[in-house]
Length: 599
Image 1: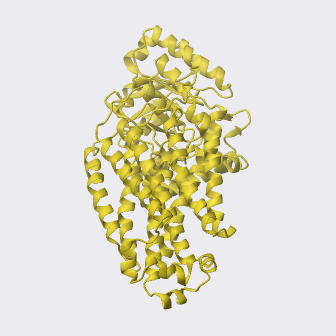
Image 2 (image 1 turned 120 degrees about the vertical axis):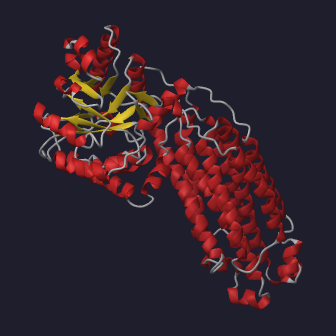
Image 3 (image 1 turned 45 degrees about the vertical axis):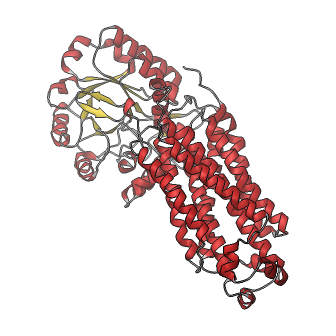
């Protein structure tokens, strides 16, 4: 569940439920999605949670994809474990694991206004038996830690049962540090860090986990955390330091890393800031480690691919404004355009309308392809390559729609044959691309919150284009016309067939072609909106603006130019245009904003 859906759709609803109900509802729902075949691919498509190799950590022989983990307090009953393993965490803590189950539906206590969650000392736990059963079925993508609770004897037994499934343990009992080959981290409340005997811990434990107290305001707790880390490092502690909570925005995590923390566990801040907090932290951390990524030379082929589509769209627009019907159309129909004009001039106008909307869509698609290549692929961004690949492959497959009604023109084939080797060259030359994005965003400021509304608008726009492309393509190879089309032409399909039994095939060919192009552009808009929203990405905003204008202008203008202004027919275009401007307005400051100030 990305931030745009969490804050824009689900959070207002969840805040009205009891904390226990909202937690279990959302965890079970996400877990069900992650558990179905292909569910983890859907989660990845919506959120893009992969981490760069540069943020990878290796501690005590264990590799962590990134240094951001999830505290066991967030999912004590393990109802969302499958989902959380797909949400970009570097490691996941489970627990506290106890010998017997312990559950209290009245917990936790959440104050949405003060952004506080009170986790009681009466732990929620499903018990060791059910925990082991879940771990046997669970296939996490990252290391799993187990936090233990109970008597010394009980915890020793828990370690024995959990060892095959977990990478490390967390306990408040220092006596357990030498009872397993797995790393054992000592849990210490932030207020008792300065009472520790560091020499003893240094020789027995694998590291220290600094725990959050109950009821302490976040700002005060973060200050206490930073003071504790500085104290431990200045006093000579060389073991790993892991912090729990205190992070409500990426800047908090960066300050903890700068102070000397090795790993962090997200707690209550994850609930209030949203599921995208992990991704925002890793992107901000990568920005510190690699502010200027290397450039990839293979981008030029994808750029040429986009340029070719742009030129093709311009040529199609010129034809639509002049002859409309091309010589090979006349040859297929067995009649001249003048004959069609004499029979019913609106037929040619209608064909111009289809061909102009296709031209505008191609011009827009070409601009977006070129921008993705120049500003994304060139900077090694894997998501931009995959956005191009997805849209391009769908576009190439769309050629089969042209023959769905018995008409295939040689110009489209030549265009297809020109584009294919350019695309394949770009695909092969960028095959090893694996870069991940960075962001200048480190704060939960109003600009960021407004951008989520704009992002939701663009995602809705992209999805609408995809759905529209599918519908138009289907109409193009089945009924061809919608009722408003027939009203505009003033003739039923049967009369058109009597005039020329090949005319509908040509119109269907145009409709299917436009549907295919709209589907491809829809996926371009959708993937950019899902994957390219990082603060400071001015090029994304300008790509959406400049790339969107030709399609909207051509699509709406041509209807007024030919007098096809039926409101219900143009309503989807008006709706899309509203989403377009809402997205642009709400995201402008976010994309043009520089680096946020540090803590």
